[in-house]
Image (tube, rainbow, N blue to C red; front, top):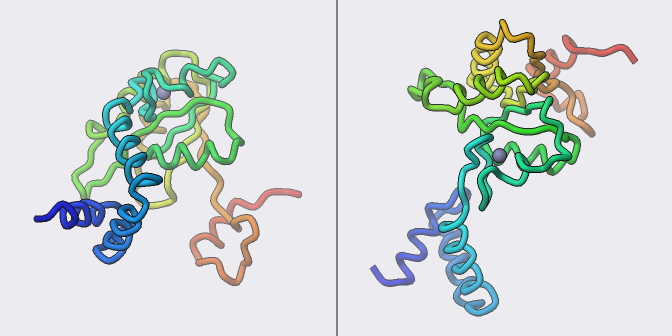
Length: 195
Ligand SMILES: [Zn+2]
């Protein structure tokens, strides 16, 4: 395989890139060898060498504990549980949460053979039982697996007195009722709030 073929072959393994977009990306990179390709290669090498999983929360950073875990302005009483680092980033982009995080690394799934030992659930239970955490916010996906995982965690913490909440389900901001699926609309109706 030529260098170019192997570049395309590797690019095609990225999420969202098929063979066609991988070829376009490869051409784009080669045309911008100095402005883009070299800096990208250096950034990838640096990230591959230096980025670590935070041993406290499961976030990615060059230091362990990560910047979020080290930040003294963040409220350690609030712990937000997410499936994946991408979900943590999504919540951080809102700037609406000032607590700390715990990344599970997936959700329970009998179908895929993913059990509690495959996720960072024991670490979460230990962290929550440590005494500092007062509220656990389960920001898990509104899927069967996400909800199964939420129930499992809630059960394991039932005797701790820690308040457990989850994200609201309902009408998205800017959403039109006519376009919502029945599941979303019925959840929104069931969880209506007084004005
Ligand atoms: Zn961390």
